[in-house]
Structures are given as structure tokens and as C-alpha cells.
Image (cartoon, rainbow, N blue to C red; front, top):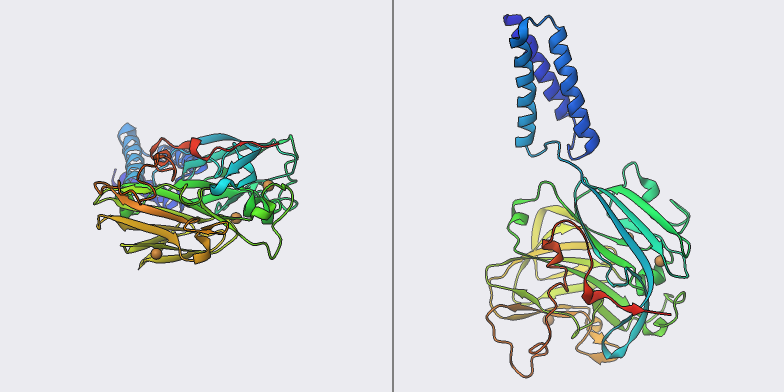
Length: 399
Ligand code: CU
Ligand code: CU
Ligand code: CU
């Protein structure tokens, strides 16, 4: 009897050991593996001269306990959702301030593209249909593509570019978690630098850090540059020496950007993306923020700052407590990025507006402005996971 008990305990401990060797239980295959091991362990317990049902039950209870321990440790065999999205690439015209229009190759007709919001470990499938007259691909920047490198979206390296009129389906795991993004990888000097071919891909972590659970306002800012010289010449431009003369947050230049509305006590996250072709130096007035994550990865030692440099391709998640009621500028401190063409007081600028601060001064830019609640995808980020478009980013079809 004592020997049989010892054997059951031995089997259970072996299962625990093997399961512990799996780095992440976030994947379906691993969930299946756990199931398989439980089954094998049960058979083993039965085979090892364990007499009577009592001992078999003991082995099963041991296994249940093992699974329970895993769930408690936060690495239970979670279910990976399959998320299928459809994207089109369309010739689209967007109009910035001062009636400056730009021809874009816009994802679902909008700049930035739709928000893709998924959970770590999800199986993502995106079918892309190219409705333009030029070839494109999509690269999923920040995703590791373990075992799926053919889905990395690089023309002539991992695939042939998607020809006009064709469709292509990308399949990959949402791994790792964090603030990621997607963009075309064909002629990036034109398509990414000045045709608006980018959008956000936010992968929610399965085990968020304590501070993330306290965030009350989550905003997403994609920074980009434009060259009016090439505005209406799709297929051209993006040459060394081009002069950037328009600068945008989520495809709009001040005063067409929107205020970041907070209330005292909020814990605010700004997800900053270098989605264009220039370096930006984002400064927040009246607050000290914590640099929480770089390229989606939480920093081992977050640091405090009031200005942060963001290069092309980079992402920073910064977090601050709304503890100073008022109205505070957020702007690019590369000063020439705060113009619209040749006019000052534009470009990459916005304002943190606290609830309760009157904004009816006649000189205040945004005193009477229509508020767009999803300009920073702040409402979309609160919706159930999935793909979310925003009307405010839609352009009009271009010839
Ligand atoms: Cu492209
Ligand atoms: Cu990239
Ligand atoms: Cu300033």
C-alpha cells in the first residue's frame, strides 16, 4: 500500500516536472501536450501494479492538483483564439490641414489602418486584398513568427509581393505581447514614409504587470512625416534629400489632431509609434512620465522623463498619473515638426485636457471643436478584442 502511494506520488511529480519544463502554456499545442501527459500518467498509474480503484483515484487527484497548481501560477493551458481579419489596400486621398491632400495606399481606406487588438498566443489570420495598381506586402513589426517565417511579409525574401487584384493570407501567432504594428514592406521609402501604409497591432499580455492593470486611459499615437512634393504622384518619391513639410499624429496635423482628455487621478498610457521616416522628440508639459515599455517589452527598470526620442520603427509606452489639473501641451520637440507646410503652430502637437477646466476662452484653438472619441483608438481599445476601424481616419477614394 505504502509502495503504491509512493508510486502515485512519483508519477504526479514526474508530470509536474515535465509540465514545468514548458516555458509557456499559452499555446494550443502545449495545452494538448498537457492533456496527453495526464492521460499517459493515468495509464502508468494503472499499469504499475496499483491495486484497487482507490489508488487510481489518488493518481487522478494528483494530476488534477498539478493542473490546479498551474492555473494558480498564472500559466494555465489558456485557449488561443483564432482571429481572422480582412484588409484591403485602397488608393485613397486624405486631406491634411491647409487643404493639402495626399495620395495614400490605405488599409481599409484609412490612415492609420484599423486597430488589430488580440491576445498573446492567439492564432491570427489576415487576408489582404490589393485593390491598388502597385504591389504591396504586410510586415508584422515586432512579431517573432516562430515557425511561420514565410509570413513575415518581405517581398522577394519571404514571399512574392501581392500583385494588384490579388489576395494573400498571413497566418501567425500573436507572440510576443506588447505595442506592435504592421506596415507595407514594398518600397518602404515611399509606401511607409509617405503613403500611410501602417496601422497598430496591440497584443495584450496574458500576465500584465501590476501597473498595467491600473491604467484608466490608453491612447495610441502614430507619428509620421509627409512630403508635399510627391503628394499626388503615387509610385514616386521618397528620395534622399526630400523635404518633410507635413507632420502628423494618427494621420492628422494640429489643429486637426484631438485633445487627450483625462480626469484627475487617471493613470494614462500613451503608446508612441515612430511610423514615418523621421525621429521625433515627444515632450509632455506639466508631468513626469515613466517609460514603461520599449518596442512592446516592459523595461526591467522603468525610468522617469519628460521628453522621449522615438526613431522610425520604434515604440515606447509611457505612463503618467494625471495629478496636475490644467491644459498641457504634448508636442514634438524637433521644432521644425510643428509646422504645416510653411506655417508654424501645427504638425505634431496636441493637448492633455483635464476634465473640469473651462475651455471656452476665445483664443483657445479647441474651444469649440468637435470631439472625436476614437482619435487615439481609446474607445476601440476598450471594446472586445478584434479588428476595429475608426471613421475619423477614413479618406476618400482616389483615382
Ligand atoms: Cu506598399
Ligand atoms: Cu518595421
Ligand atoms: Cu513645449
